[in-house]
Every structure is written in C-alpha cells, then in structure tokens.
Image (cartoon, rainbow, N blue to C red; front, side, top):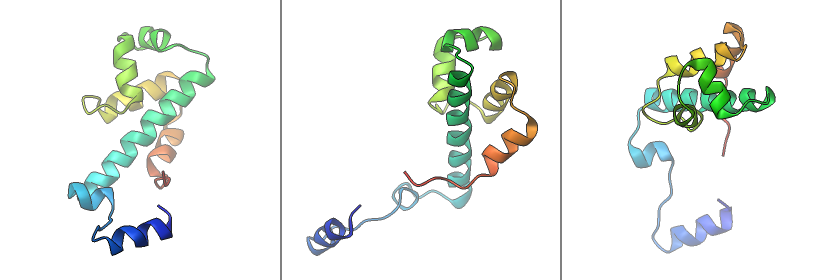
Amino acid sequence: MKKTKQKKLKAAGWTSGTVQDFLDLSDEEVAFIEMKLALANTLKKRRIQRRLTQAALAKMLESSQSRVAKMEAADSTVSLDLLVRALLALGATRREVAKVMAAPAKAA
C-alpha cells in the first residue's frame, strides 16, 4: 500500500497490519502456509514447462484433474506430502524440492 494512502487511512481511524496479525497466525503457521504455496506454485510452473495439462498430470499421479487443480491452488485438503510426490513425479530432485521449501516468501 502506498504511504500516502496508508497515512490517509490512519488519519481516518483505520489501522493496518499483516495477514498474520489479522488471522492471529503463529510464525509456524505462516511458515507452513508459505511452504505450501511455494510448492503449489512450483508444481504449476513445472507442469506448464513440461507442456502437460492438469488431466495429463493427474493420469501420471493416478489421480483426477480436479485434484491437480486443488494441488495447484494449495487447497487446504492437499497435503505437503502430495505436493512433494507430484513434484518428484515431474522430475524435481530432492534438492530442488528442499530449495523451494527453504526459499523466503516473496512479497505479493
């Protein structure tokens, strides 16, 4: 948010904060969410780089297209385990997966 807009909102009595503050998330919860989002984004990028449809990836994983869509959206029903297994199925190495999980979150 621009500083000028932030100042105007503050002058009007509004406060601003982080998502972590708003949702009262612990540092561990934030780290988990960031890892899951990073894995999901990497999965989508790898699938596209390999010129696979969600249906084709689903077939490789013996799953469904809708499940792959949920994986790429980091749906709450998708486990880290499933995301990691999908990345490995797309040819990612353990080192590459670890690098994705260890990378600091990018500002949106």
